[in-house]
Image 1 (cartoon, rainbow, N blue to C red):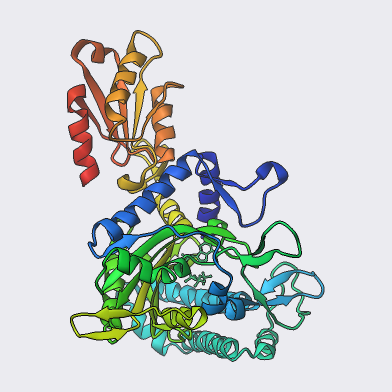
Image 2 (cartoon, rainbow, N blue to C red; image 1 turned 90 degrees about the vertical axis):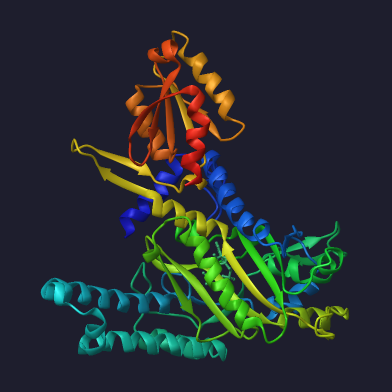
Length: 503
Ligand code: ATP
């Protein structure tokens, strides 16, 4: 739904959530700044994650490793040799694309054809329509589905074998054209490393080549033994971290879905070899429940289990979310075996093992990781919350129905007029509530317009101070979602709000 997506992007700017980076210089592609409301929403998502991981699990602790790491780290992790995307250029338009993305887009179009056929059939057959049966028996639909499967499988096979000539052949066989110009005049496919390089040191000769980390996980692996020893951690235990990561993404699109500078929230869970699948299942369920706890609709999530596994994994799944542009990866859960610790052991010459007193054995722990992009989660929340509602009187309102716990401003306090002592009372209320909540003062425009503004900014509650307040110290509390207004004494505000926010 491209329209909805465009609305999300412009709303994010208009209501102070996200600006393009260095906009006065026409911006920098795939780099974004979080604005006054965005920074609060982002912080609330990060806290919600951190609390559920670190506070709720006594055997998980956090760290904050540096973005710059010893360059051998990236040799050991495999990023220097294998963190590549396949590139292809169009000779006529001179535009550059990711070959795998072109093929995935082709497959997605087949998927859309299937959806179209399904929708048509549903209309035709009404209540008796059986979708599962239809997609396995209707010859046209079966054809689309099989074609899609074979295209994706062939691509995965060729990429795995590094057979870039076959990736190009596939693009040509499918007749894929430059999305902008329609030209089918392609170059060969080349590999492109996604890591950003930088230099450490003052002079060009003595400088060391470094990378900006492309993921936060390696900061955890290299600190595994430090944390285990100093924290006297017993397996199974986890290390959590949130922080920036950098990838020189070739195709910059879909707003903050794919950025060149982004933030990850990762947790590596160290387990006894042989127990990793049990823990993998545990984290799959636990992470999905975390998402569901935000109330953004069960139907908007699905698992995508990987059939083709990366060389380091023995099980992997994505939690996909229904973004305005379709279901896409939001979080990855991977059973990484002992690949990383073993690789660092080999490259550093330092033992990274654990002595398990319960079974009297020394071993290299296995790792199950959960890895979610904070910005991607932000986009999921924002796009799911933005709604256009038609009210009873036929008028419409734009409302950002953010989960209460994530809303940047929890309460806005509005004096009906800018005089008669009402602003002073409003200020008193703010002074009471600000210890508990992020509170905003708003006195401009008619109160109806202020409600609309707070609805669109996502503020769950408005408190209105009017002339009656001066007489009986009562105020109006208005709920963003139900638009219900309740009259209550100022003294009851904190208690009432607490009840709402704990629901
Ligand atoms: P994709 O296939 O979408 O490029 P990935 O499989 O490379 O993602 P991982 O390396 O598993 O992603 O990273 C874990 C998480 O980090 C992803 O699930 C995603 O939420 C987030 N992420 C990865 N790359 C980006 C990016 N360029 N911008 C924003 N978030 C990202």
